[in-house]
Image (cartoon, rainbow, N blue to C red; front, side, top):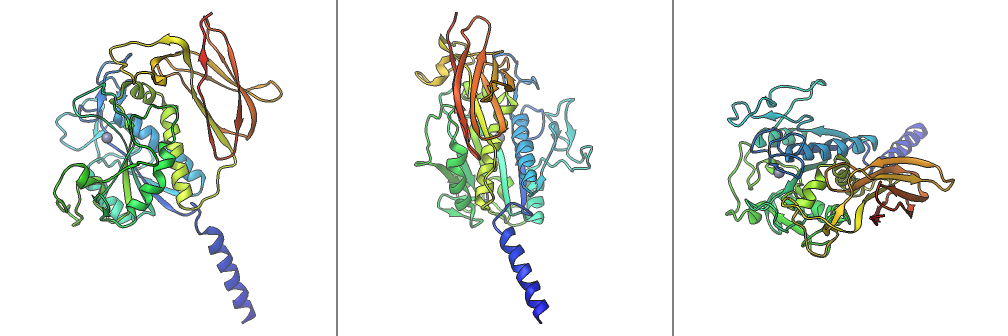
Length: 378
Ligand SMILES: [Zn+2]
């Protein structure tokens, strides 16, 4: 009897320590889109023509976010299921398919099935029945590229104020301020105080309760038609051109994934990260940037020329350069130092033709420190 009691105590202790953490949780990540077709949101950027796979394709940026989110979740002990792990998969028979596309019935080299049709994904989610589901996207203003419009939208299945999968609104409300917290972008509306969280039917102006899918779930967005409480995130607007230039940088997409990770980890009451992170943008202190594909919000940070090819160093207290980042050539000036030990550092920026700068930064565990060095011409 005594032995049984102590066994029970041990079991109770284990379940207490495991409850609330990410360990053992199943998270389903759906990077939106999938193919290299005209329907996968290709748009011209400063250096790339439309349909250039090195340029902007929402297919690609959604996958970058998804893979990084998976990496962080798995590191924290979660089991992650992804609808796809590759770009270039389309529905069999897709009339816009390019030579880079393959039908979704193919697997990747690890045997992972690639799912891209919304109904297949929804049915898969319903059968996996994960603890958390998220669909990753960015947004666009219809047919009006370059509009000065950039905000965060979280969409759940149902009508605004009435989530058809109960618990969806609670998840979106918890995540919103964490995902919104990006001082490197220029939000044109929405804030943690006025979050843009909406039911898909209300958002699309459709009549509730919407059409049922094969499983009988009603709503608007095909990918949300399953039993799991969840939301789809339009992380920012890629039709806001300076934001599109930032999204071309994979580490900028990782920054969004990091915020999703923080939100999901906090939702399950997981341990905060021991390490912290630095993100930033290097821009000119005096030069404006004018380009037909770079319409920016007046008087915002986006008015300043992003410095391509700047060298950014993270210097520790002993004066040792512990990390380095070379800003890309895509007119975003973005740099990042992820998973840095907490402490005091200096960020040092160099670029030929400009005066070098140093800025003190403090890294704190589980926090993202944001710096915006501005360079003066020599
Ligand atoms: Zn999308």
